[in-house]
Amino acid sequence: MKEVITIFIIIIEKDKNGYHAYCPELQGCYSQGDTYEEVLENIKDAIKLHIEDRLESNEEISKPESISFTIVEI
Image 1 (spheres, rainbow, N blue to C red):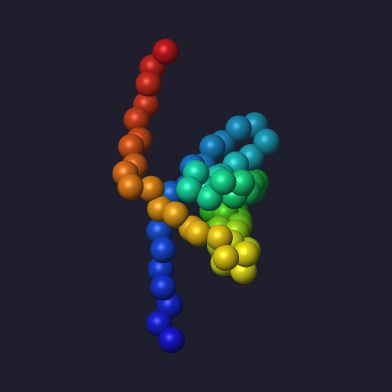
Image 2 (spheres, helix red, strand yellow; image 1 turned 30 degrees about the horizontal axis):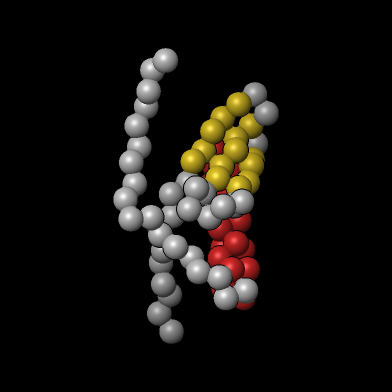
C-alpha cells in the first residue's frame, strides 16, 4: 500500500515559555514544546491524531482554496 502524503500549513510562535504551534486548517489542532524541533515533532503527532479522529468520525478534512501570508506594520 502506498503512503499518502498531505501537506498542512503550521504556524509556530516563540515566547518566553517556549514554542507553540497550530494548524489553521484543522480547528483545535495545536501543540507546544520547549524547542523548535520539539514543537515541530509534537505538531506532526497532533495533526496525525487529529486526522485519525476525524476519519473515524466520518468528518471531512477540507483544504483551503488559496493561502495568503503577509505581515502588517502597525
